[in-house]
Amino acid sequence: MPTSKVSFRRFRDPSDLKSTLKRCVDDIDGVVWRKGETVILKPNVCLYRFPCRGGLVTNPMLVKALAELIIEGGAEPVIAESSIVGRDTSESFRMNGYEEVARSLGIKLVDLKGDEYVKLPVPNPYVQEYILAFKMVVDADRLVNMPVVKTHTQTLLSLALKNMKGCTPDIQKRRTHRMGLEYSIVDINKVLKADLIIEDGTLVYDRERDKTLQLNFIVASRDPVAADATVARLLGNDPEMITHIKLAYESKLGELYNIEVLGEEVKPLITLRYNFKGNLSTSFRNHKIDVTIHERNACSGCFSQAKQSIYNVIVDDDVDVSGIDIVMGDVEEAPASNKLLIFGVCAEKLRGAGVYVRGCPPKIEDGENAIRRLIHKKE
Image (cartoon, rainbow, N blue to C red; front, top):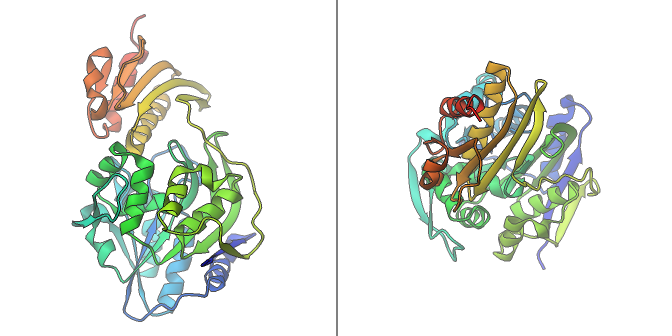
């Protein structure tokens, strides 16, 4: 059976990043960058104004290192991304150092949300008969998928396969969640295929323990399933237990078992899991957060906006945020609660049960105001 090549290498110092990246690419037989071709570099740049933690966006220095290698080969790199629904990609670029990277190299930095999109049929679909994808991505000579390695509230891990969702417009992102996230991820990857995958394990955010881990590794491959399976094993997870990775393998999008690992031996660096149970119980700036989230098929946009609203209220008002129940997605029945927040249009049918915040996703400032109403509500 065909074997997929995956390179796994660690580096000790940021100054070794570019040389380690080059060795990883060379391990999988290298890439010849052709003069005049356009190469889209698609990182994961999904957040801004979040409590300062690394490991939530792709390391801009890794993207810069690859862009330099592409320029040295004579091709034209373009950094392109569309942030999650409700977030400003340009602001995300600025807050995470991407503007400076593009400026220093004299290359384009593109917010794909301003690009037109095309409708593409999905062969043998699970749930999406077609997907909408940005024309710039579809027309590019080459596409490099550069996800950051992180956990996710719904898919356990967010890696290369899931990162391709950022090549689709907001209307498609909403369809992706409403029609079943993990099945939709596979359908997107049946249509959109990267020429090279570079997974960034510089900083890995552990949501369950609420801390950032300095793991300093890179995984490279041409096979997104093999790359994701290798990272899952590095993080102490069985890739067969991650639905979209297994479905992608069953759809013949890549290898799960016949993988030749180059570079260093793959063994768990840590056991990293995030089984979302609906509770956001933590502390931030010496204030208690004890919030219960009730969701069904809610998108990451609503999760992100709701959590950001909570953090902003704590920062601005210097208060605890406890005892609030938040409903999002297509939940059938509202929980009994005297501090109930109905968040987003998918949950609009329950608006009479609590304080409703409209939007897809709601604006952060609207979420903040609704939370303040609940905090100061009399028992």
